[in-house]
Length: 135
Image (cartoon, rainbow, N blue to C red):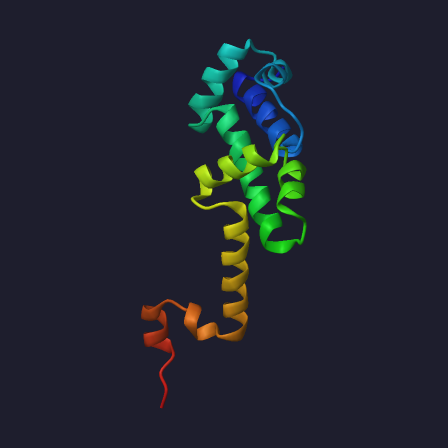
């Protein structure tokens, strides 16, 4: 028999594995065999965020990876990570990351390119000063 903690962890694993699917509080609480209000309380107590916040964070993390390492369109990425519409993806991404997905992609790719072409410019100054002396 699973403990309360294990049941909440099991629901978290559902989010981790199916973040790109539509997931409701009802589905998650059912997977843990709790009422949705009891599940919400236990999840928040254990992870310090609501299940919805955790799900959103997983989706944003996946979107950041895809924006950096793929050429899928912004709309495709939004749908691939589980957002139901492009505008919702854009607004949510900006709220969590501080910039829109398009800007994030451009900035990240510029930083990666700069790191490859001019590695000394992305080394923190204090580190570079200590270890990168020119003689």
